[in-house]
Image 1 (cartoon, rainbow, N blue to C red):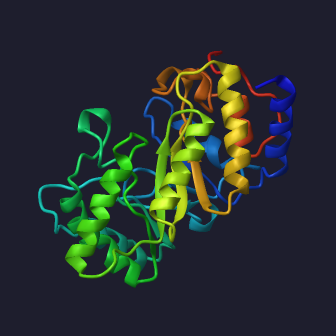
Image 2: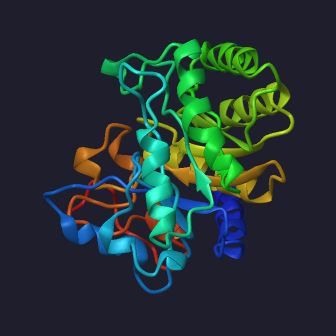
Image 3: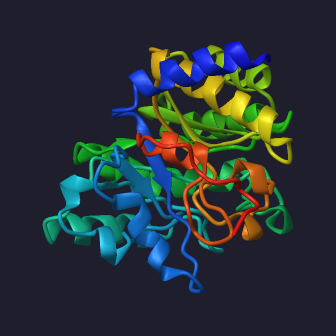
Length: 285
């Protein structure tokens, strides 16, 4: 990608900086609690966030409408019929929380030591039915499990949907499909196309994405190209970039992050929040 193309993409992303699609993957870090305020500073255009759990960040809890919390049922224990997640959401609703969407299992197709929730499709289907469907009956929109971008991810989803349908004796219910991707832009678009082909009646949420461990120029090119695509796509309802942390703790490479070593916003971090400025080098500080 040449510099002119990159500049044009950057300009197009600035035009749509007031995105209603763009969310925050909130990753707490006890070493720098002050970083929490970065994402809700004046001018930030982020509209929603998730925490990989069922509870909101207390700092973002009030007012709920300022940064919408989307709970996640990350994994499950030994009992596939346990309803702890459902019960937690209902309790929050009864306390006045404005919960409109919920996410289900995070990378259940991946081993635990790779960061996945590692759940067999049949077991996941039972947990999904016990927790997600009662919430859908209350008007909450529910997401299918977010499988990894690995070659076997979509196959896991096929099996899950089949198991769910078999238990219900009717088509498995869902509203949107979260996807993850850590490769180049062409791969991201192809992965979204594949997911849409398999589940044409589901809106797509890209709940984790980045081009991991690349040069700064390549990383910026990917960010601007993907942001322009995700904003303009009619099938992508929401998206959240994996980079809301400091560069020295990144597991996707320093250049993909929103913050440098001192907690200052990088160029990608500024653009993602809809802010102006040049940003600092990711490895500075």
